[in-house]
Length: 388
Image (cartoon, rainbow, N blue to C red):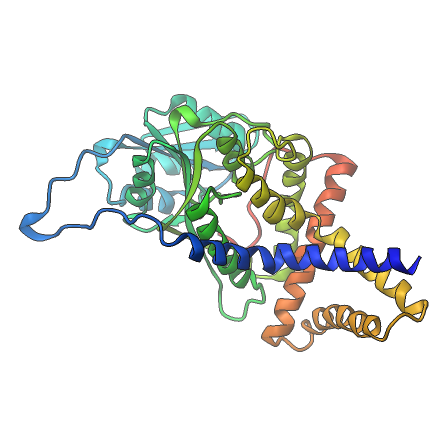
């Protein structure tokens, strides 16, 4: 019995360490072994600068639900992009808006405003793509603001005919005194994403700034968000999904940790259907290396709550059976993580806040699964509190 407990404990711990840290380290080492990627052609300046070829037609789609307070600013930001105006089409897809979102978008200069019945973000984006005239369709949120050169940087990725999906870099802006540690996690996540893109393809994107070829766009179940469902499905169809760090956007971060937990819980209620019945689990179409990336970065990450519970239960059982003193030490370390997370609300030190963020995000994976299994997932969405 003790041998079984030890196997369960060390296997669970090993998988947690692999998905949270070992996988990133392996990507770094592999990238060094393979060497630097082929660099892009050098940029020329001055009188030697060659005329730039005309960029492809780009349709930028903003799906919005009751965003009258920010939509005009978002439209102005889009129209100020360093992209030829005659090659840029701005579409605002209003998903069952009960306010003046559509009117504000028209007044601000959007090329096309769609007034749609409430069907959820994905269906609003589908309707916009059907009306889009661009060779490339890009997507953004109403509270996402792109830097001036973001569109050019994002579209440049499609110069490679193998690329079917590209996402940019979103920076989360945190207000003074806010306790959310999303920025720490996100910087780590973007580092992994850059390595995945360099070696193969990314395993997930983000909703603030991404694009696909018009002919590579996929219509998915409305409860399955694009952030997770598009990249791996594009890869299954023989194209690459890449990360473009030079295409930058920013969003206001959810201010509180409680708000962030609610946001991630909602996100995971949309993620689990993709994992369980949306094709992610099926290895068909995955190149071998990419299959390992999906397992390491996605499937094991989502399994982390169960792995933690197994590790804790096995550890307690080993201590009760008076196993080696090592297991007392490992139990103390596990309990110390929970204690640090609990103390963060009293003593807001950075290490304690990070511990609380880790425990919170891990719990949100399980909470999202529970929500989906208990009552399913709605396609409709609401803006997280404090992000506008």
